[in-house]
Image (cartoon, rainbow, N blue to C red; front, top):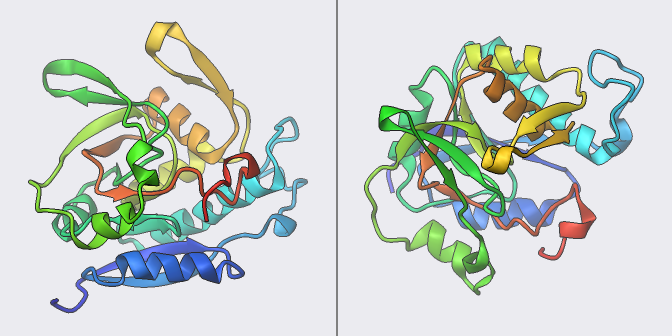
Amino acid sequence: MVGPVLTGHVINLRRRTDRKARFLGWNGGHGVEWVWHDAVEPDQVDRADRALVSPDIDASDAEIAAALSHRRQWLACVDSGRPRLIFEDDACLRQGAETTLAAALAQTDMVFLGCNADAAVVLELPDRLFAHVTYGNTAHGQPGYFDHFAHQAPPVPPPHLHRTYLIWGLLAYALAPAAAAKLLAECFPLRRQTVALFQHGRSMQSCAVDGMVNAALQRGSVRALACFPPVVAGPNADSDLNPHKNEGG
């Protein structure tokens, strides 16, 4: 393997050394230098800080902490003036994806490298055609799935980047400084936002950070692209935020 030519910034709760070890087991062989950043702990959340949190939201301290962890990365992206690759610690990068990472960094937008596979994505295809995509994550539960994805997956053509108006999770993404500045302005303080789900005219209310991002995408104030197919996968059942999903590691 050629020495690392890319830098990836990973958000991790310091006490979750198990997740750090798993991440490195999956991703240590890629041409990426991993830089670790402490996630915000729930007990560090100041719900009275009106610059960060509106008084009327019903988010848990853990959900607010997750948003603040990503906010730290957005601030660092703006301060550095350079595009940034940001990963959560349950992200698994596909074998041979370095070319896609480099292409994502060259964009002037936000680029989703992966997402929650148990929720729908809306992509804009050529000629203003729109696709409502549901990935499903049944395969993720098969023994060895992520090890294969990370180390032995067969080569595939670089995925296309399509504009997205609905995508859930901040599993892994590339961010340009200008896009980071827009996210900071659009997503904080955290507050209840309406997110269109597109099918059958349905919508939902969300104050989670990915809901805030979706609302900004749908307002057109932030532009985001998504890899199709994704080059990063993750176990959707493995969550530090929602104990009801925490059936995995």
